[in-house]
Image 1 (tube, protein in one colour):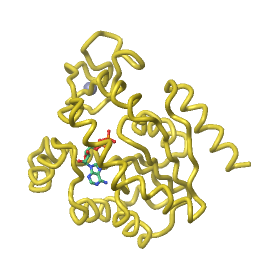
Image 2 (cartoon, helix red, strand yellow; image 1 turned 135 degrees about the horizontal axis):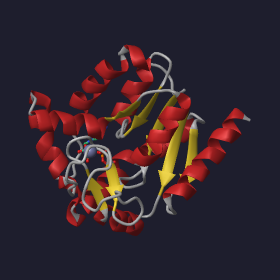
Image 3 (cartoon, rainbow, N blue to C red; image 1 turned 120 degrees about the vertical axis):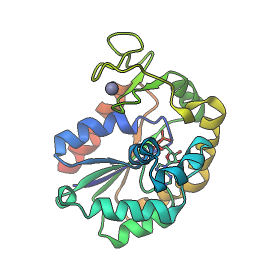
Image 4 (cartoon, rainbow, N blue to C red; image 1 turned 90 degrees about the vertical axis):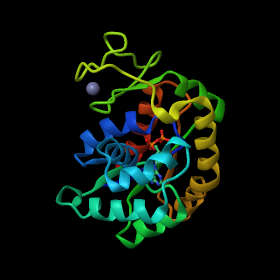
Length: 212
Ligand code: ADP
Ligand code: ZN
């Protein structure tokens, strides 16, 4: 299966991506994680991307497209993949199309105010990338990563003003992909403004429906 998760920041793409990729046995590929890894390692790509990311803007298309071209050519993507955070512009979607078609685009739909609220509780582990939420998905020990024991922190671009900027970027640059994929008849909209469990259940309904 070649699946794309589409949705505004804070829609829960990362959280849902984990179980979907395990269940379908395809690699989860998150451009946000890949870019943050580049930033942390201070690669040339990371140094270029940092400023855009901290301002809530998109990293330029040519850079991201090239990064993903290389990633999708790797052996583990041969039988499918789950993309989280890519494509985010029509141009990226066209580049992805040229590399072969998709099977399914899950559009996680959430309203803006719900998103801003969610993001204020989000914490990440700077070492292993695990994501938590103070209310919805807290770590076992406050402030500490369950997986690796590192101290959790607020992501650089999760400040409210940056979140609002990212939302605006989503509505302007990424939302056009909804009709792009709807016209290809591979888009499924998933109500995602409830709890993690409710969104999981909604995705299951779609997947079961497809497997018919
Ligand atoms: P979220 O989905 O929570 O907004 P991500 O972790 O997916 O966050 O992305 C964080 C940032 O990384 C984005 O705001 C953007 O700057 C950059 N980024 C991630 N994916 C892409 C992409 N496909 N194209 C351009 N920039 C991207
Ligand atoms: Zn960790």
